[in-house]
Length: 305
Image (tube, one colour):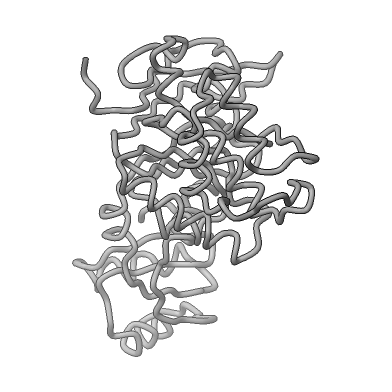
């Protein structure tokens, strides 16, 4: 059985009435990756993850985990899930929450309970009830429940949403530790700056469709320095720049904004534009960070000149 991909979808669709929540989604999550599924609210992230977990049935298409159907009992045993809320019992302790789920799964071994509490940093919470936990502690307890059975794949929906900076740091360190131990992690998020600190691969989803899948290394190559100009007339500026900067990359960002890649002589260019009756409102050198790249893709992207 080919396990190059821990997760693979082919033409995955989900329709609610006349609304297409997910449309022809093709996604590949390599085994051993930390894959960040990125998109604005309503883009189809949660629906996609629910289909992968068997919580929602697709209208069309197919989803496989480790080369098998998501409904295969073997696949379910290899997958840990934290979708929306973890279903915690707030009047119980962390240990009692884990023990109850472990018993339901036929995993009453004390060492199993101790192990997931230790991994998630909840060993010393003692008799403290979950209702008194911070949001970060509750999220880590949710991950602890997902880790029961020692799954190979973790599917986490917005695990850092609502956390304070300390909670985000703790969860980030936990994700890195679990990945180093060999677990594949698929998580959704719209907190792009934090996701960029841990993800090895990204999928950008917009309007229920996958717009791009990209590795961290390829993404960093695309995040280049550029010179940005705001002008009064893009259509008049374009031929002037194209004729005089044949080797530079030129991109139209909107109806007043141009970006030029591989270029440094800003004073000469501004003078050239002014001479050709193009008014320059502002200009400056920028470095496209990961968040800017993602936002550009999610909003539809720029058009090349």
